[in-house]
Amino acid sequence: MEPVHLLDRLLDFSMPHLVAVPILVPLLTAALMLLLGENRRRAKSALSVVSGLVGLLAALALLRWVNAPDTGDGPGSIGVYLPGNWQAPFGIVLVADRLSTMMVALTGVVAFAASIYSTSRWDRAGVHFHPLLQLQLMGLNGAFLTGDLFNLFVFFEVMLAASYGLLLHGSGRLRVQAGLHYIAINLAASSLFLIGAALLYGVTGTLNMADLSVRIAELAPADRGLVHAAAAILATAFFAKAGAWPLNFWLVPAYSAAVSPVGAVFALLTKLGIYTLLRLWTLLFAPDAGASAAFGQSALIAIGLATLFAGAMGIVGTQRLSNLAGFSVLVSAGTLLTAIGLGEPAVWAGALYYLLSSTLAVSAFFLLIDMIERWRNAGMSVAPHEAAGNAPFLAEDLRVLDDVNLDDEAQALYGRAIPAGVAFLGLSFIGCTLLLAGLPPFSGFVGKFAMLSGAFVTSGTSTPAWIFLALLLASGFLALIALSRTGIRHFWTQPHPTMPALPALEVLPVAGLLAACVALTVWAGPVMRHALITAEGLRTPTAYRDAVLNARQVPNPVAPQKGTAP
Image 1: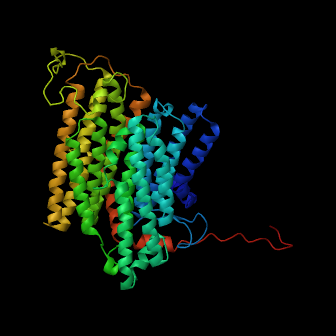
Image 2: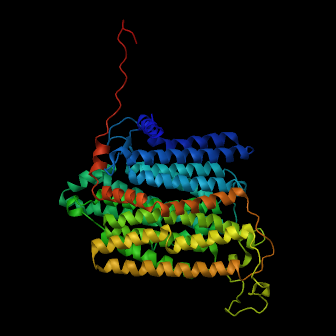
């Protein structure tokens, strides 16, 4: 038997229990780490890396299974797991479709890279780093895979509780200050989440997402206003978690204050808010939802465009590296929200591709920033002038200081060898710049081009499409200016007192994330086909509803009768 067919048989045999593996592995790993205690840090580091690898392999196996290679370009398979063996909508359900498994695989890639990077130094900056990281991964994977709204809230809170500790990891005034704001906004958002879910349950009598999709289409006209109010409250909570304007004031300070591997994983948190909005909007307000079809579409577009504008203004207005990464997250969030609001599968396909590229690029950028800052700032992660918010070669009134040499010691540059460490940092920074600015030929450009081509092919000359085009091009141009300016400042305009010492545990994760972006570019065709089929399934969620509502309980074993063989 060929290895490929053997793998497919193993996947079929392991389903549907494989759906729960990305949740159970980090949960059990965190519990084991807590039993080991803080004096077994090397064992914890090894467990974290192994757990990340197992979770990544399970996510990739799920992704292969849902793509159903034997059925060609069909709708693929949807894995449904009933943890309590109660049929939906009465029991909790986990659902693995093309969208959720893609997000779980993305989480696995980023988490695996961050766990390797953290073993170099950052896991020793405080206690319980690896258990908290595993619990956050459990919450993320559970939120992506759940098919129940209240269970989504539970996984959200598990993920947020772990993120509170991770944000404060390493202590310091900036982290405590940003952490208080982060906790306050997320507690408020969680309260709105509960209120919205309670309203939905009061009107429809269910919190199962597939069942909600069916019942909203059958609502009486008198109840439709309450459902719309509940959806607006829920959307406000998810907008806050996605970093949408005007609820994004907390994001850049929090993400820039976090240690670099935590910042890399935090890049996934906003994508969870985006995912939830996309999932619920396409289920609850599908084209067959009657009078509720496409409810809130104009608000999605307006908020997305405002977020994109705010992120573009922020990225060109800062000089601190970690703030650049934070504003890049906002640009990505605004782009995705606008693309969702345009409501066309062709645009959604480009947005899903762009989501993969931007998340990998921002995560690599967060890790890279840590290495650059330690090299340029004599071992510290944040330079004194950056903590104060001042430029190193400008006075407070923006006058150029005469005692700062901007000419690299006025030495001839021709024929001078570039050390390997500096070359890696410089080339990686250029790669992140090209990806985040969306320049060809890399995956950031492919995703933006796919979104714009889909918008103009399907929407024609609509005003939102033209505004989206203008802001998308402007944000890329401003990101190019800001990142180029910062690259010149860190690599050309200051003397290099020491050469960077780059451990392999830090180089490999950054190189791996950037290599994943290159792989997205090389295999853009298959990835885009996956994204397009995923978008078509979101547009008509009949297959999702049928898979969830038709999932059957496992029958109880029959006890042998007296006098018969067991």
